[in-house]
Amino acid sequence: MADSLSSPFAESFRDLRTNIVFSQADRKLKSILVTGTEISEGKSTVCGNLAFAFALNGKRVLVIDCDLRRPSQHRMFSSKKTPGLSDYLAGVEPDVDTLIQPTMHENLFILSAGNKTPSPNELLGSNKMTELVERLEREWDYVVLDTPPLLLLSDATLVSRAVDGILMVVRMGYTNRNLLKEVQKLNHLRQRLLGVAIIGPSDKTGYGKYGRYYGRYGYKGYYSYKSYSSYLEEQKN
Image (cartoon, rainbow, N blue to C red; front, side, top):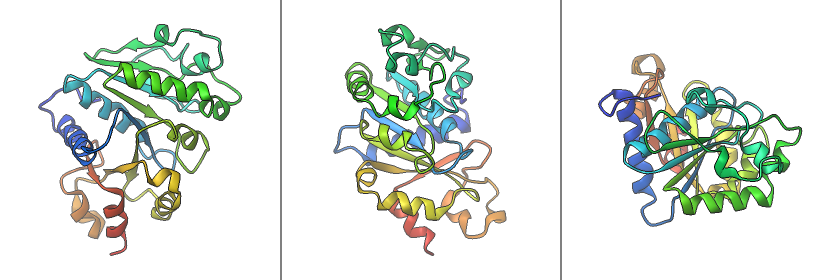
């Protein structure tokens, strides 16, 4: 987790934050779903640090861990995993406000995943989840949601219907570009795509043509941003 405004790591996420905000200047952007296409692409790290970048800018930000199968945000923020989102959606915990935890960072709060459930897709696809996101959008400056990979499970697709925008995470040398093209074909997702957060090596020379895409942003914690369409177009070259 970036911990200083002056660190290169934090700076890369400030750039990411700025690019997202300015690219969506003509539309409402209160809730952002962060996802990928495969496991271990780094989407949870991007989610947590993007939320932190918004908080550093004085915004009240809530991170929601919607990855009910492989939750990790509670570890990133040294918070309790339970009770959390699943408990609220299942009706075990009636008041979601009591489940929201402060983090060590000012303006940044977390709603952890909660206890394991046998039916995460049913909970995430429920009207209760949609109503929760709508309510939280009114109460927070930004709501940033961490979900499972988009094409791997139906969970992220179900949640995507409730959010304003979707940020895809691409890990260079790992992410299958064909899977990204599949995402682009899905109309209900394409309309909400904000762009691509790219994790790439700081050593450009080892990855041939990819160097020109990623510049100084390196795999050990530096990130860059491109629009979804421009990223796919460059992959053709």
